[in-house]
Length: 144
Image (cartoon, helix red, strand yellow):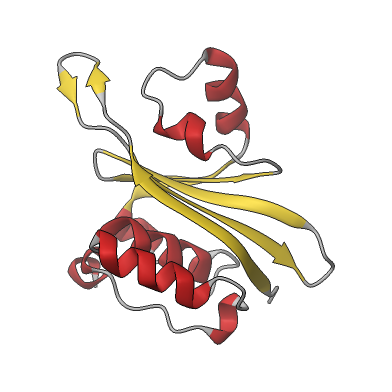
């Protein structure tokens, strides 16, 4: 199984907008990772109305994902780099998959209190993903 070093993390919520009525903004968490070979990339979670959307990209898309009115080019690029897009219960059924710990990390940060997220980010930045303890999120607990 691959190892990933946590280089940087961003977390926040978008403002939302109007689709077929008012919708809440996405919750976005993005982690910049480096593998053992030194390759850097980003994995992000955009939680939109309770659906987990995970993306792996070569550049940060954090600000773009917070923007409710992102342009068609960015939407197309994210579609091409989508790892998963499911209800959370399906994500937690993939224990042992390559991205499972990364998903749990992002989900925890997306669904914990802001002050907890800030301290957890500071505690885990600069660590290998497989050497940290990822707390069970409320979402994970309800899906078990």
